[in-house]
Amino acid sequence: MRNAPLFSLSPKLIGMVGATVLLHLAGIAVGWALRRGNVWLPRVAGAAVVALGAALLVQAA
Image (cartoon, rainbow, N blue to C red; front, side):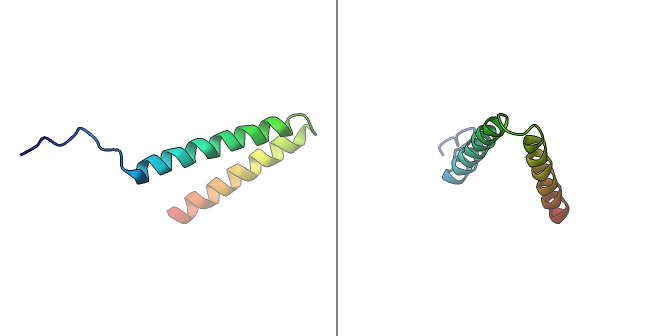
């Protein structure tokens, strides 16, 4: 019997990690672009992201 690898990287896991990295990079780019505008715009956008995340967590519970 062959020994199983310590862990296997499935395409689904690679896709999830890749999507997470891309979403974080997109968020950083948007935040960087919003910095040059109104001072309150990045804060409002951040609050909207927090509200969306909280809503998703409440739905998952």
